[in-house]
Amino acid sequence: MALAAAASVAFAQKPKAKPAARPAAASKPALSLKEQGEKAVRAYDREAIASVISRWKTSAGASEPADLRSLRNRSVAISNMLGRVENIVVVDTLSVPRDKFFEHYRLSPDAGILSGTADEPEFTLASGTELFYTARDTAGVSHIMHADILDDGSLDAEHPVDLSLPAGVDASFPFMADDGTTLYFAARTDDENSLGGYDLYMTRRGEDGLYLEPTNLGMPYNSPYNDYMLVMDEGTGLGWWASDRGAAPDSVTVFIFVPNKSRVNYDPDTENIEALALIKDPAATRPADFDRNAVLDRLENIPRATADAGENAFPPVSLGNGRVLTSPDRFTAAGAEALVDAYLEAYNNLRESEQTLAHLRDVYAAGDHSVAADIRAAEAALPGLRRALITRRNALIRSALRH
Image (cartoon, rainbow, N blue to C red; front, side, top):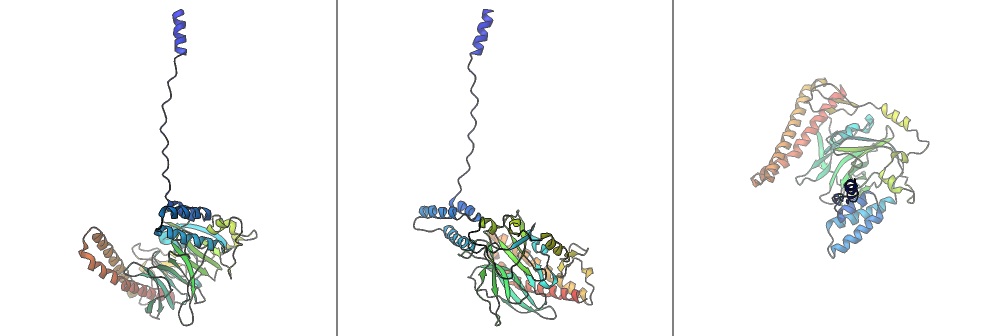
């Protein structure tokens, strides 16, 4: 008994083993000044932006890095734009694939025709007399082009639209309002009028055909993300634009809103003006008496773009009246077969040239610089191939609409 008791006591008094030490939690790497600035910009946090600029200036010394200069410009743009955020009613937002985003614009036939691709969009006036489109030069810079459309569908007097933008600035996503003078577009600049990425601008065309200096549309249309393809549809009283903000990879957010007849801004001291500028909550933009369901019903009455069943290999053609023809058999007007063949030939020529150019660039990047001349020749051929495709597609659309 004594031995048993002693053993019990000895066991009871045995010190407990110390628990194994937990590995220290891995600390997150500190954000760089550039990352801190970007985070502050995306939240429109002016105090945080100012703090980053001050610390960055101290660490940079006499030299000012390009990224710091860009942050300064965006800081000025944010401060200016938050003082004049337009008070618009956002009816709805849609998350859609980027490569097909403008197929989700529910436009009335009188608004014109959006076509082309997400990277090189085209806009044809409802009258069918003018075309605005995007083309890249040999340096890869995007320009907005204009051409008159002749009765046979061919393009006349093609030329770049002089928007008084600095050299090397990408401009794209053109839309001409039904007044025939107000042009909306997107440009990617890096000055005190830009928030970063593509920003939306407006200009007006004079009687002499020249355009006034563009005006940045400010907030809420623009953000530190890409914002583009703004359309005003007088027929429905609604507007549309696309943005990368709040969007998943390879997607965009499409905003549907009620445009003002003349600009009405929020009071700069409005509570949560930053959230309104970013449109964090679309419902917060709607007045208490706004009948959203009535507007959505009006949208439902706009003909949807319906694709006729056909061969998937045929590049679809939008007629701008709610119909998308996806088979050559759907073109039944007199002479349509020849127009379809010409359209397919132009389409295939352009795609083959683009694929060849992409291959040559890969070869060059891999170290074979002997293809440099071939690359320049392929780049020089692209604008003509694009023009041929546009002309032949216009002719095909006109024949289908007349039939």
